[in-house]
Amino acid sequence: MRLRIRHSTTYRYAVPVMFGPHRLMLRPRDSFDLRVLDTALSISPTAQLRWMHDAYGNSVAVAHFDAPADTLDIISELVIERFDSALPNTEIKSAAGITGVVYSAGEQAVLQPYLCLAAADPDGVLDQWLADFRARIGQGSGHLLRDLAHALHAGLGYAVRYDEGTQHPVDTLGLRAGSCRDYAWLFIELARRMGFAARFVTGYIHDRTPDAAGLISTVGLTHAWAEVFIPGDGWVEFDPTNDLVADRQLLRVAVARVPEDASPVAGSFTGPDGSFLGLGVGVTIEPVEAPPGDRG
Image 1 (cartoon, rainbow, N blue to C red):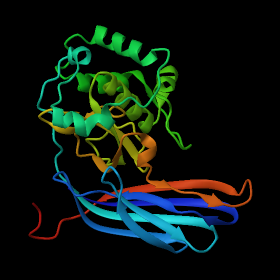
Image 2 (image 1 turned 60 degrees about the vertical axis):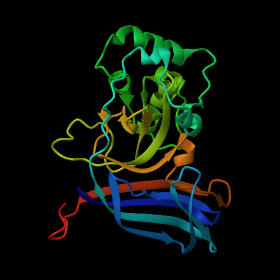
Image 3 (image 1 turned 30 degrees about the vertical axis):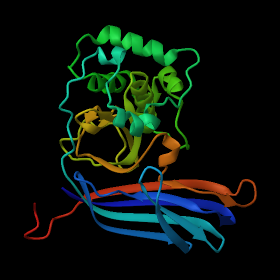
Image 4 (image 1 turned 120 degrees about the vertical axis):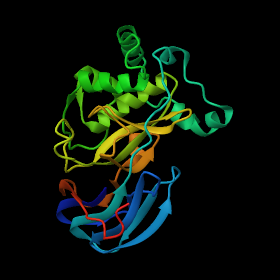
């Protein structure tokens, strides 16, 4: 499945402002399940780009600006080929949420950042939710993490949020609603409390009509989900927003321990108070025909 992705980000200001460095995480890394065929990145006003890999191995472009402007346009265009994801083959019974998953010493050393909790829960709200979840799940589907994603999908309401940042997992439970990044962050912190290494993923979701009729995420925006490291299976995708597991509709761009480390565009500006007028984001994803003789 070949796809062309166009991701536009536009910041508007009342007067020309000076831009600080901007970090752009818009280019996926090649893997067995996703191949990058072509990329283009255009920025206005003109910027000097420096490419690097961050601590997670994500591809990051750092943009430096010389001139002020009242509009900042960043357009990323990708052509990718998406293959099947690694489906979980290992059964994880509900008891694993009590006894914990078993990682080797080598895995423990590498996965430690993704095992550490990052959201405080002084009142034990998340722990109580997990206790209730274990009590009602029984044997479930035979895979604890599938059941966890399904429980969040069924128990929360989807809400598009255009403001920056991610809700605290306790707030998402209290509101019983959130955006895709809120679903993902709640899932991650719950999985970590059950002893699983989990990380935050940003990217896109592809509307594969009519198969995708049940999607509740807004196609045309960025998307977020989780990956969990399962012994014997490796990193496996779980999207509680849409109740998907290792699905080709998920188009990964960046991974991180916490949501703020995986923002597609992050930067600063210097200008008068009240000069920021707004932000617009648009994503289009279209199928691309493979060239003759290259349809494998």
